[in-house]
Amino acid sequence: MDWAIDRLQQLRAEFASGESQLREIERHREQVRDQLLRLGGAIRVLEEQLAAAPAFDPTVQPQVD
Image 1: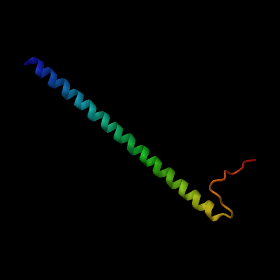
Image 2 (image 1 turned 45 degrees about the horizontal axis):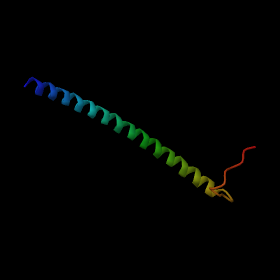
Image 3 (image 1 turned 120 degrees about the vertical axis):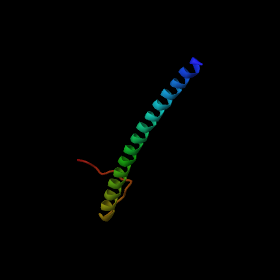
Image 4 (image 1 turned 45 degrees about the vertical axis):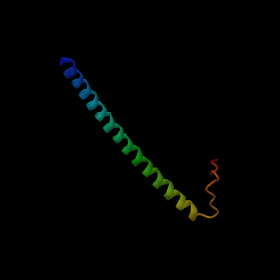
């Protein structure tokens, strides 16, 4: 039965490690989601500002001299 106890300890350790990895992935996912929300908001604001400007074409890149 010692092998079963050893295996149980291994499985519990692997399970705990997996849970830790999942928490880290979820934290990273939240950070990426927040960043995308900020970027989307910035894009929306700039598009609205540019749409109010005369002759705005969102497909044309502005020329820099």
